[in-house]
Image (tube, rainbow, N blue to C red; front, side, top):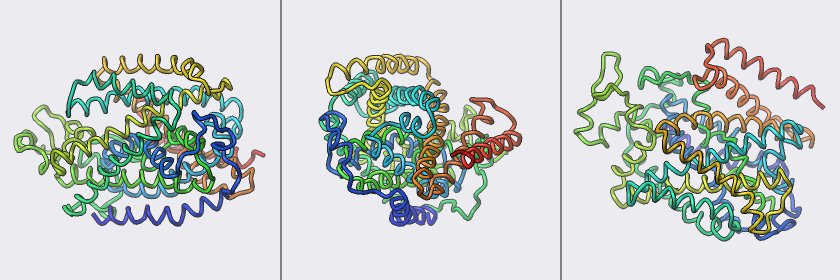
Length: 494
């Protein structure tokens, strides 16, 4: 618990201190913002700063800082350090500089920013890649919340239809009509869940593994996890540490802010808040898997069905390991019901449901905006928005149908999405670095995390069983060489 409490304090202090550093490096001023200069009452609308923060937080959160943190803690206490340092020096800086950069360029998206600072070929690649990512995230964030809601009331298919219709509405309607009104309520639900879980953790004071107990990979010896800590941990915990997905969402709020000086609390602050969410659920995961918390929150009958083998690993009667028997969604459900009772668990689960639903809806909206930017199409009329949305929803429905007909579909595709969002993070950080250098500002602010994330995504692409599956040590050397080449090209470029 000491590591958890120290991590919470570190994130708060990081916002107050390093957030100021990032703000001073960028240098916000009093120039007219896109929300005022390009107001269209659809996408460019001035919203109250507290609503902008709530929307940004919900847009970037999703299930990432919950499910990703639960799975990331399987690697051991090193997850605490990645969440804290990754968030303060990487993710929050990434979100702040890219969000402010979007605001400086009329609220344009990541692909357009990439074209401005990395070239036309990179722009075209990012248009295709980011569109693919947005539709994937939108489609696959339908089934998970539908499953959770159906456990509370109703049928899963009914909730699938309701959620998808909601996505249509959030994509088509002016941002202040639905998103601006409903998201604050969803945010409160999400924050209630996080605060409630944090309070229970503090009251229980469970004996948990601390950072000083070892930063090595705990997965193989404790849980039978067969993945190397580097780079798997840094891809598993994306939201809550560093996530390129955020750079696709920030432009929506860059079009709704009345002052550049709102950037630090909105962009940097929302990311730190997400880091706090990740810390809470990572600590719960540590309790569940490393402190035998699963024995306390599961029924006696279920506990008796597990035995400890000669290798020290716990398995059920079918031979499944703990991490195979208790996936992240099931851990969330069990913990909420056990710790908060019926009423509290419903509210907490709604908080978990609100995150993916809002992120899914925002992903489809982002896809529409990416298409509109790519073809330079105005979005003032409902007809123009509908024409761009139809192909996006058609692909989304096809992906959703495939996933529902393929039980392993979500797990398979999400592995590529997890790597893809970290690839976008590396690209975004390089975009920000080039911008800062051109402006004569301290580009080391984004260069260091950019180099690190380049190493992460390159290594993961080489060693992951879902991609090339090459031997680990040669892959590590190769990724180091490729990262060094990219860094050298940056320093040699004009």
